[in-house]
Length: 597
Image 1: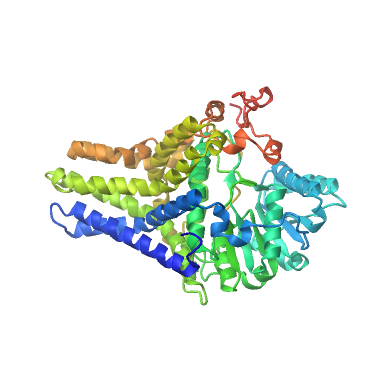
Image 2 (image 1 turned 180 degrees about the vertical axis):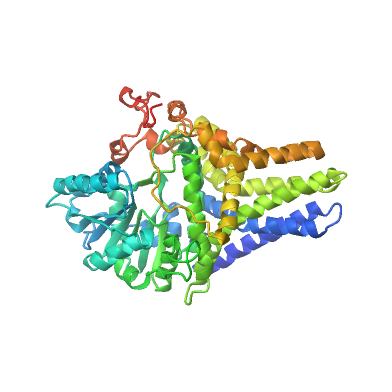
């Protein structure tokens, strides 16, 4: 199935599967609402439901196709990305590659540590002479500006005569990260063939870097080659559960999406290799008319650069293989929301780019889906709110919905939402070696159940955060496009409440409304409302490094890097790493976290 169908037929088949699923789910929704007649309010509820469906259906079929490939193909990577699947490990590194570390008010110690690890790996492989490291700073805080040159000079002195290290700081961060990279292109882009784009928390092993470079050398038709990025070990409870869920869903989802996207793959803005000549010539981002938040510089630059590269005739591919490419996930719920709102604002700018001339049809679909990803939140929130209002005002709420079709609809949607994680879970449980990497089958199952519960609690919190932000965009509300807090830190309940009180208020009011008007229906909405009411408590509890260390000791939400850490992961000295086979943390790592817990 996966190797015999050409790319166009794959896309047509995928579109049919998704369309049929959307139609079927919509029909089931109409049948559920039609028990007491189908009126205007039912039509609005159906429309809201319809907005949420595309991503759900796409995720489901990505997972199904990905699982089929995982279970039937001897080489799943080759099945979806033939060019990147097989590379001669002895091929000489002929081109020059720039390592671009893009930073803004970051911890310079961590930045230099990660870059030092990567340079060291390349030196060990005997290929360091083909690389040049650039630290591209947009820092604005005085103490950071003072520290960066000193620490980076130390890194430069360490590798002097082996790998050049160039430091540059802009005084104005025009264009944000995309502008930072464009400035590099204007200054030094002509000196190199490729650029490995890195964020401040990026870490790649030398083998992955060289595989990306060799693949680009062998296949000049590829303009961007995106590695699969996984989370590094952490003691933050929020990051642990989040990256465990991502790790479960990532492989099946990415294999499935790569199967139909093919040469129009994703670019996530970091841990990816770009071919500089076409990037410089064709991927210059336009400045949108008007001012922020929807005009001016394009904030979510990565997907736009990907569609421009594809428009220029070069392929954008993802290498759907885990390992060797890491990042740090937000350590708290509040940092996660802050990052998501930046993406939300950036994706809303895509409205003005949908009509760009010359784009591939798949590229336009990707931009539209990026917009719809966030528009689904207010649609889902409105669906829930109108549903509760309708139930509360009805004389007999049980006559509003068909219980049989309603149950079938609920089960179908839940299966579709969690399909990527279920698909990878099946593969992990079948393969003993993979299961052991996650701590064994029992821990995998415990982690899966816990992550599903956590995701169910998190979803309404994020939906309301997105909705409030989207409602403010037309009135000039914008996300703060500043540095991320990457270090684990404790959130007090008071601080969490100050930020998440709208979620708590929504949940309390909704529960009080249903309890007073339709107590029997309350249980049906509790999965949605529980996360709202507990939002502040969830944020505070999942920021506790002490809890994170207990979870790490117990092996809950363990990832393979904790079971069998690579040299690069060992070098970052994460407190989440266990002594092999002991189940306890080394005494030198049992110190309190940066928060002093």
